[in-house]
Length: 153
Image (tube, rainbow, N blue to C red; front, side):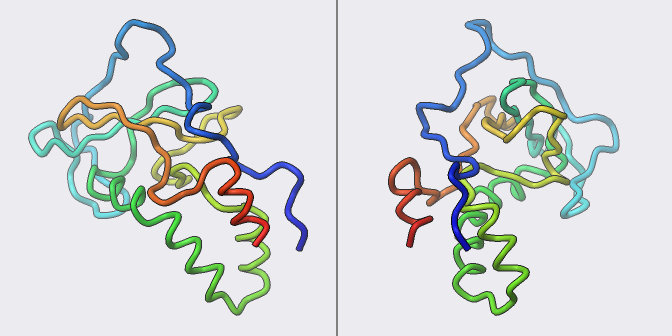
């Protein structure tokens, strides 16, 4: 299968959007009864497991549907899992889907981080536990020329 002329999600860290303005973002809090779609654990202010995500290009912040530990696990494992599946797959349909999508660069999950129409990817995360905003680039995901080399190999 030939790679597409434009690699999906091919951006460098320099392409990650900065805050929409110099004013600090206003973040929310978990709603009463909110629970993680993965673990079914409650998401509460007391547990400090609430996360918000920002999508591009709208730069809107929305509550993640997963708790903090699930979000961090996805950041650590999504790229590695994609590589493992490409290396081990013996199913042509699965391989076609994996290669069509290309190497993932940013956190993605349609259930935990649904995107509004027109948005392309999750670019930032906000953790209620410490009030920090962090990038949503996957651990180990190559950028730029390194990503292209992986795609071509």
